[in-house]
Length: 247
Image (tube, rainbow, N blue to C red; front, side, top):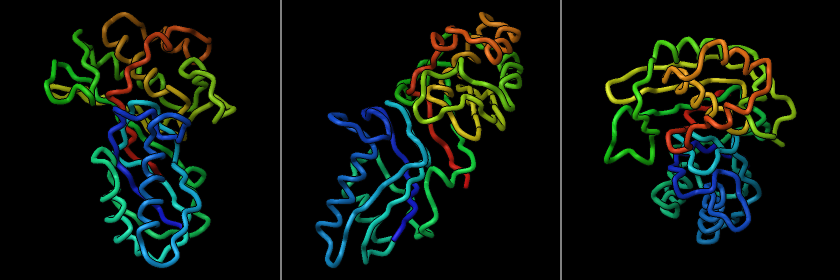
């Protein structure tokens, strides 16, 4: 039996999504909760596999991560959701569970992914863990122009560290949206997939353009010539949210 899970979480105290030895991860907590629920429930309950749509790094959050759960159980999806949420810590929450075909795979069935990054334009008492506060005034018009340069099918090798998950550094970026609000700047990026640290480096580069310390011409060169500069501009994980997976 296969279930599709929609999950939200705050990544502040976790070493990312993917399970690791001697580290607290979101996936690890979910597996602990699944095994606990199955142990306490009557009938045949057997955990087989939990697989996410993709990893998120340490400190990164999710508004809607998707995972598939392969198991044997008599529990209905809604009951399973309630029981799992009772076991999970308050910073991880299952939004919905639904039965899916055995052919569905959380990662391989995904067509594209979408991330949201929040930049705060002011010091905040309540949202420090969920934003990147930039004291400098940012030119959003220039940031939008740089975002246009990075949209499309490009080689994003400069925007990533070595990534075992993807052999190719070619990525189709569907759009990069920069929205200026009263207290925040929202950067939303949708792409076929994302390389390790790619979103945070794109955000860091856009912020540097907004500061007036990086030109549009330099951004164009990042797509054709390798540079160490984007790695030095990597935005902190606090403002990053996995927002949606498209299937």
